[in-house]
Length: 139
Image 1 (cartoon, rainbow, N blue to C red):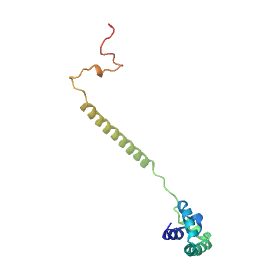
Image 2: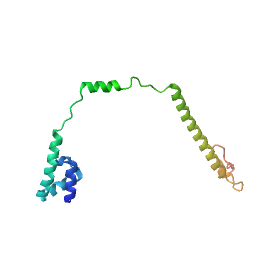
Image 3: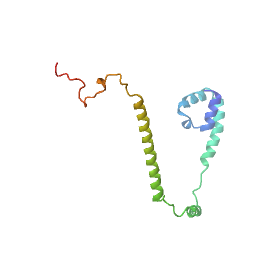
Image 4: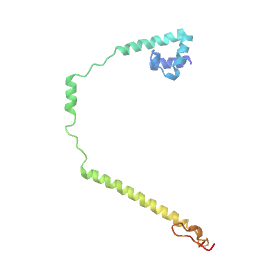
């Protein structure tokens, strides 16, 4: 803890150590115990400001102010029309459909481009649902 950092903490958070950042509180208190004169000067200024701020109170608003604010509020807030809601839903569905079509087109291009050539054996291309490619019943 440096004197500058201690002063910064006290200026920012006040003289009460409970308000200081938790990760620096112990270091700051230790520094204050070792440098009592410097710490006392910084804490005295902060204590004066803390006391002044604690005395300050804001009065609740008067009835006239509350009535003026309520009177200036809009009388009725219009909900969005059904037509606007319908169009926004249709636009969202259209965007989703366009994305699905673009994805399908891209995948079809990838699949067609990676199709095996005719020189390979087709035995490994069959599935268990299509039946075996060779008849092993003789063995």
